[in-house]
Image 1 (cartoon, rainbow over the protein chains, first blue to last red):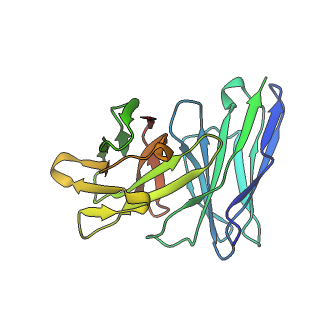
Image 2 (cartoon, each protein chain N blue to C red):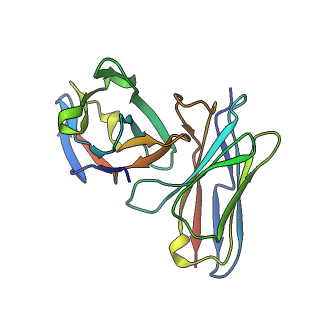
Image 3 (cartoon, one colour):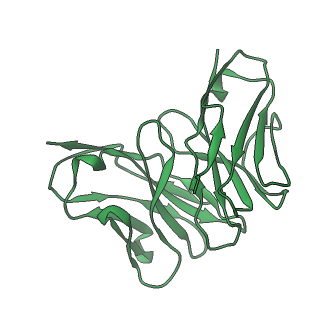
Amino acid sequence: DAGVTQSPTHLIKTRGQQVTLRCSPISGHKSVSWYQQVLGQGPQFIFQYYEKEERGRGNFPDRFSARQFPNYSSELNVNALLLGDSALYLCASSWGGRDNEQFFGPGTRLTVL
Amino acid sequence: AQSVTQPDIHITVSEGASLELRCNYSYGATPYLFWYVQSPGQGLQLLLKYFSGDTLVQGIKGFEAEFKRSQSSFNLRKPSVHWSDAAEYFCAVGSGSARQLTFGSGTQLTVLP
């Protein structure tokens, strides 16, 4: 079975631009979470979606937004990019219940110049 | 708010030696605890998890961890390290109805031949 897939793998943008990152969860999983991992740090929670509804939001500015589609795939959008947004963006999927593990994708490496 | 501390930024061990990676957490309720491993260019792979019950948890690749409530710790151990274990290790606590993960800053493991 395919794991969590993310696209694109790498992305280079300039300050002020907008970016959209995509995630496809494991088949059957209904929950998708997004994390930002800055170089040298642990991942930080951005959003979680379950059944197309936002279930949780981390401490990120409104420039960050996300949505989940009927097929449970998800997009993360970041507007007005800053240099500090350069990071590895990780997507994780799970069944959605309380006691379940999150399976992570390989991530999208975003570089903002 | 919950937090996770991994006091060792970098650990070096010889192949075949034992390993212990430290993790301390801060969380008001009974925590859901996880250890993940990340190899270069890869996403996060779950090694083991603690939800409840037996405080000694067995995971994949010969790893185990012990939950000690009195010390707010969840240290990861392996009796004999293999060269393929070289990677970055993250401890995380799951909180909230969404089981949002809060990660530590990671411990980089180097294995000497």
